[in-house]
Image: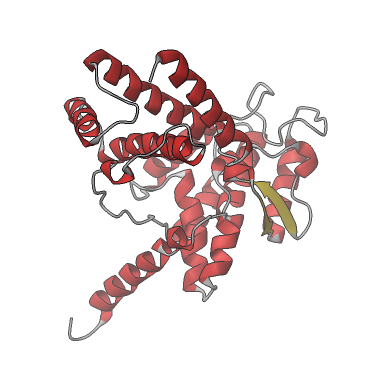
Length: 298
């Protein structure tokens, strides 16, 4: 497969991922880099790629192994390449290919790490007991209320516009894959956002970002991450305490309260129920630890 042909096929594939599959820009960028790296390696090694065989993929895996990449990174690269060639097969750009040659390394099953309800309350309370400008404290509290109270990803919260400021019982959120979902809002979330807006020194237009940085530009997620890191040290919180852990806490605390797993899947915006089912494993672990701690025969 010549370079021009490869580049043309990659362009068609990227167009498909963006317009038909609705993948986000970050995902598409990673996929494109992975496939480009594969073809660069094959050209340098003079390996056949039209289509590749088991030997070619094995050589590429060996090359990745020498780079000492993490297993999830290697798995993603193989997944990207497999996705590309599946697209070529589906559109008759190649006639045949044994897809079983794309074998990713086995990954250890990871469980989401949550935070106790008492610690979440401690975090939210401490946000206003700070020497920062008062409006900045209110802003950070409003963001974290959305993460914990409605299960938003930090990227989803920071993508909200001024005209989308929570002020009712529901909020429409644009999530992964450019898919919308509706999440319920607690009164404390609407009040928290309203307090932030009242204190914010900048004037807003409807299409301006809801959450602003210190100089009036869009708020960077790194600012919120650093804020949580600071609280982690100040309050002696677990090492896994991050903005995303607040979203995990939202799910696990709902599940502990008896919420239906499919309802949680919808609230989190998971495309697959298997992703949401990880929270069941988290709760089972918590129950086991609790049993060991209090049972008289333990």
